[in-house]
Image (cartoon, rainbow, N blue to C red; front, top):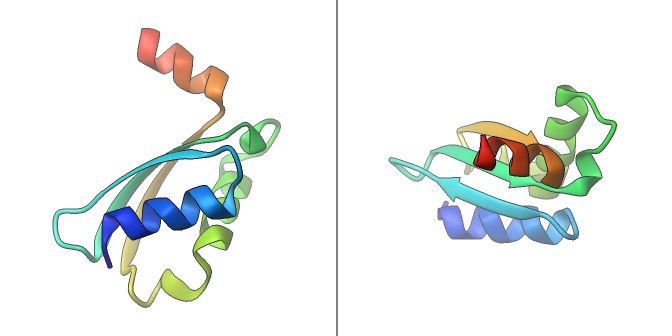
Length: 81
């Protein structure tokens, strides 16, 4: 699985989301996802939204996925801090 394909699927499944996806081996992935859809959601709920955008890929083509999910405001604070 190509990181660009995962990025595309996340951004398609979560409208207005921006995603950065990297992988050292095309089976283990690290994703940073920024979306206001995460506002008011717990970490688990945020991860569920990301997993939902990927459908059946997680556990199959995607062996492992590390997710860092932020609202735009949270991301801006991190980037400027």
